[in-house]
Image (tube, rainbow, N blue to C red; front, side, top):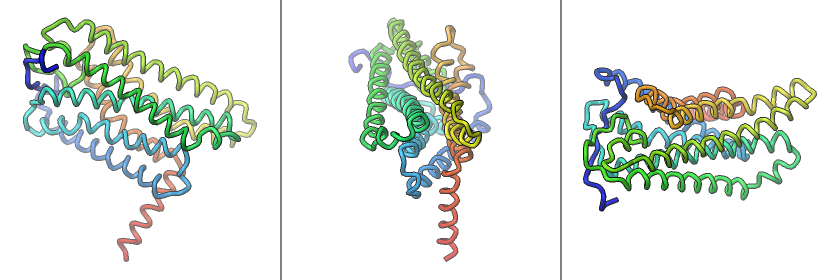
Length: 310
């Protein structure tokens, strides 16, 4: 990388076609980012503070809350920094670091969705063997495997992107350093890097989505076999929040990386939904649709009120 790179920095031009709206966007994204951090922090506190939530399902949900705080933190602070009127410059190493952590966190979170779908499959289709199958060691192994997949994915994509020579224009027509925005600035042929990026991201997303579809197909069949309406409603309610979060996560990824002719404005809107809005929605989805989390949050708030009152 050091031998081929002539540029020391890039300039992030921001969201396409939003000139003059920096102040408005700063307020909107500041609110969303702070709400995301607060909402996911509360979910994490609710899970840690309640012994009844120390199960595999809520272990994975707690990890998802952590990733939903880390993932937008890769892009939001820098975006808010230049929306407030500060410098739009990002160093070459900073750009590479941003791309690496964006893909390692995004890929790992995608794997975590598949793990959570498998957890729900075991809980509903094999309830008597759930504790035996989803042992702590198995849960930890699944999380480590998800992290390794994310690390390999991010390493490949970052290496192919920043192994190229960057010696010409340094203006990134986007709000963060992502592959489709950085590769056009390369001085050398970037066709291979573009193919690797599209194939790797698209293939991983489709594979993970397929695994989720398989799990939920089996879950749907099992739910239809439940005789009581109350049992079907209970089984469906435990999965609906997770399924909604999956649709919000995978839709933008597939649109961005598999569109034949990239549209800058469409890509930016979809990326914002994926980077900023989805992590905020996850906190709302899991807190509003999960009775156990709501009960735990109420107990946390009550204990805080009592402590303050004393």
